[in-house]
Amino acid sequence: MKFKVNSYHFKLLRDYERLSAFKEAIDDYAIRNGKNSNCSNSKVAFDLGCGSGVLSYFASEYMDRIIAIELNNSTYQLAKENLKEFDKIQVFNDDILSFDFSKLNEKADLIICEMLDTALIDEEEVPVLNRARKFLKEDGEIIPKGMINSAEAVFMNNHFIQYEDDEYCPIYISLGESVVFSEFDFMDEIDCNFSAEIELNIYGNEELDEIGFEEKLSQERFEKFNFKENFNIEEDKLKINGIKLTSFTKLNENIICGPTPMLNPEILIPIEETEVRCSDSVRIRLEYVMGAGVETIKTEILEIIHDVR
Ligand SMILES: C[S@@+](CC[C@H](N)C(=O)[O-])C[C@H]1O[C@@H](n2cnc3c(N)ncnc32)[C@H](O)[C@@H]1O
Image 1 (tube, helix red, strand yellow):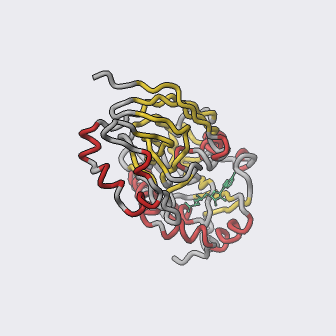
Image 2 (image 1 turned 90 degrees about the horizontal axis):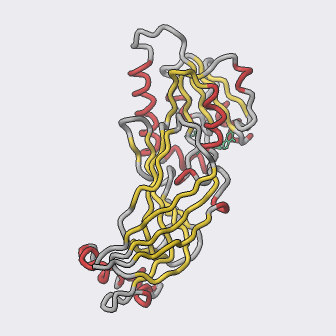
Image 3 (image 1 turned 90 degrees about the vertical axis):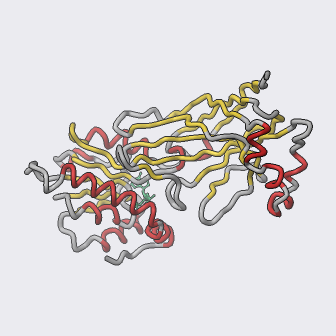
């Protein structure tokens, strides 16, 4: 099948890892619930934020009726064209946040919603699901099922919010292991106002040796930005000025997909530049409004806990 797409949706389709994760989850749903099961009822799916229509196309193999909704008019036109041979798929040009689901006279067995963004910050996955979930059958399922988010302390060259995607490669150095700070199940109602206190551990001396920290700082990209000036290992003086968030999408109970170029690329968020020592812990507060954009992100360093060993 050939899809007509614009450049953004071309990149989404070219991201093979992203697509195969969703395809596998839809196939898995069909194996567990689909035509081959004993259930004879007709199966309805909602594809929310359908874009080019690719996920509706995957689901069309198993579902009897698919409602695909897309906000952007030119993208909607492409989806309509791409899916015109499929009588069972209805494409709507509408905002899901105001879409009248009750006019469909049917609830969904399956909601597919790829409106994801790293840590659920920028796209409307959460507000959209909070609304659409009311129109999911009691035994219905959502793909993806949820998300797990982790954070680590970093020192980065630019003090602004940066995504590490296929077009942009921020320069930073990790200063501690990543820790999980949130986990969401999309079957639950989720409060869009997110706030967490996160304790980030700074690497100890031996760990810095193990990751070759000093040698790394001699690499050309770090030399270019004078990273070395900010670290004096002998005097145990390090600096942090950011956190890196990494998201893992739970497509279902068994399929977890890490960042891909177009699915939740890692994000670097500035925090106040602060001196730390090896093995310190840094307690920070992270806040944002899910679906309202990166402008809503707030960070605050709450406490530096010095290692007393
Ligand atoms: C990340 S793209 C995914 C497209 C497609 N589902 C795929 O996986 O290739 C998200 C899509 O959701 C659409 N979208 C964003 N907000 C929306 C809203 N409130 N209502 C309907 N569609 C929306 C965007 O225009 C975009 O096409």
